Length: 105
Image 1 (cartoon, rainbow, N blue to C red):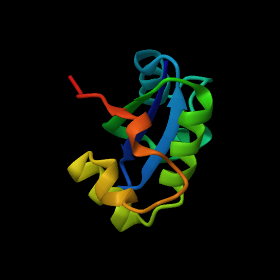
Image 2: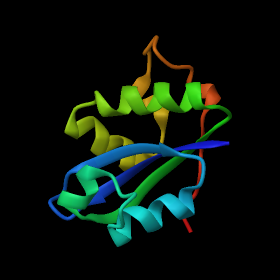
Image 3: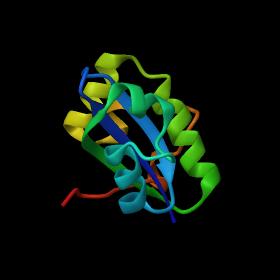
Image 4: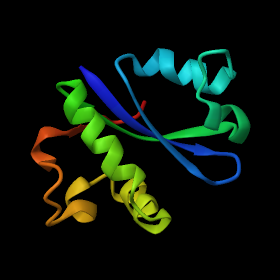
């Protein structure tokens, strides 16, 4: 199982990534250890905003790519609604039925 996630950084930017172990990856981002992404090392991760579950790496990579190309406004809408269909309606690049939102605990 793969996960696509969105993190808010202290400067209010949004980082998007993929992982197979969301708990471990968040620890890496928030602790700024050597496996932390360069972006979150310099921008300091503040909050996990959203997570979607995908059945394989290919699907996760496609969703990550599409999210990264969104405008800041659309990323904020995605975080607010957690609904891919509202942001990607009519988008030919991904099949939103392939992704499941994971509720944050």
